[in-house]
Each structure stands twice: as C-alpha cells, then as structure tokens.
Amino acid sequence: MRVANLAGRLVVVNGEKAVDVAKASAGVFDSEPQAVYDRWAAFVEWAASLDVSAAWSLFDPSQLASPAPSPRQVFAIGLNYNEHASEAGFASPDRTPPVFTKFATCITGPYGQIRLPAGGQTDWEVELVAIIGTHAHRVAAERAWSHVAGLTVGQDLSERILQMGGPSPQFSLGKSYPGFGPIGPWLVTVEEFSNPDDLELGCAVNGEEVQKGRTSDLIFSVPALIEHLSAVTPLLPGDVIFTGTPSGVGMARNPQRFLAAGDELVSYVEGVGQLRHRFIA
Image 1 (spheres, rainbow, N blue to C red):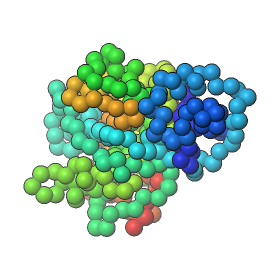
Image 2 (spheres, rainbow, N blue to C red):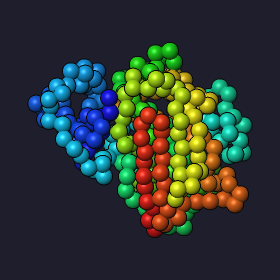
Image 3 (cartoon, rainbow, N blue to C red):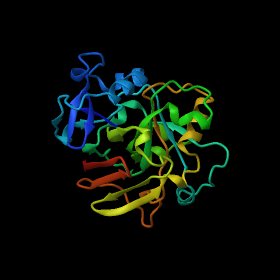
C-alpha cells in the first residue's frame, strides 16, 4: 500500500490514481496526513478492505507533500555505511550508531524548490527513511519491523560550514534549514517489499550519478536502529528515522563539490520512487 499527502490531505495511491481517505471512510479517519499514524493499525485494517469502486481519481504528482509532515521526533543516523565513514575520515562504528536530530521544520515534500543558505556549502545525502507506525519502547530487533508503518525516500541535506564549524560540530543545525529534510513521494508499507533490508538507493545531480548503494550495506539495519533508539527513548507513531547515507557525498570529493543555484537533485529508493528538487539562491 502507498499512503500519501496530496495537497495536505491523506490519500491512498494506486498507480496514477488516489482515493481521499476522509471522504472514502465517511470521516472515520481524519484528512490530516500526520494524524493517521496515531490510528495506524485501524487504518491498515480499513484500507485492506477499501472498496475498489471507491472514488479513485487521477492526481497531479506536483501536489504531493511529505507523508509525515509534522513528526514529533526526527532521528538521523551518521556513518552508517562503511565506505561513507571512510570517506568522511572516521572509523566505522561497531557498537553504537551516531545519532542526531533534524528539526521537524526542515521537512518538505518530494518535489519543488529548495533555497540554498547564502555563503554556505550545501551537500547531498540520499537516505532510506523509516516512519514509525506504532509506539515502540525497548523493542528487540526481531520485532522491530512490526512497529514500522512504511519506508520512503529522504535527503539529509547538509550545510557543511555550519555543521563542521565552531568548537564542536553542529550536526542538527547544519542539517535543518527550511527544506533540508525532503521525504516522499509517499510511504510504502513494509509488506510491499520482498526484502525491506536490501534496497538500492542513490541520487544524481544534473543527471550525473553521485551516490549509489544498497541498504543491505547498512552497518545498523532498520531493526537494529529501532532497537537501539527505543532502548533509550520511546518512538512515537509518525516519528521519522533517516537511516544514513552511502558514500559519494560532495564534501568527500577532490575537489569538493556542493550544490549550486540551478542544480537539480534527483534521489531514489528502489520500490518507493523519486524525489526531484531544484535549488535556488
């Protein structure tokens, strides 16, 4: 099942058509996309019996917004691929994943324009994003997938000067400018994937491939991350987890390369879809 935010309304997507959940459920479920995660189990049960004669209609993809537009918590994981850790000049973590946050106001949808901070060095980081479907606290990895509503595509955009400046790194601030957390184009529920632990992901700048990897190379898998995070803090329905980026970021290139006004960044995850953004000054 594909669940999306279409111009601020919760929809279920099937190919090129969508059905408005609030209308099809006669108001049983709210139209606000973020609200569905607090009733995720009931929603999945309802959607499984969605009448094929419901009011499915063609939709404009440019109207898609983030499938989790206002999460209560946004987690992000650093150095979660060996080759990326190496290119960043760090040893690969072996016991504990580096964790930071992106502030929720940075989240945006799958398409459109993103403004570059003046005088900055903005970098790309394509990532698999997991969205939590049910409350998770002290959850073992073996049970973790049952707490995931679904997967989507994300970009952990990073302004490197702010991120790396000062007496200590400012990961959360440097990665939280408006638009620096695009996710979408929709959420795909876990059962849609033959193996949710092994998906290709990548991105291209102006048509040139700059990142490509597989989530099977994650040092800490999605279930391992949920086990680690939930051991400390409860994960809430609708929370977002950026799971880490593979190698190929601009900061690690020689010479370094950063996004410029006019650049188009296309990001994808196998079985989910694409993000497409144009950067402006």
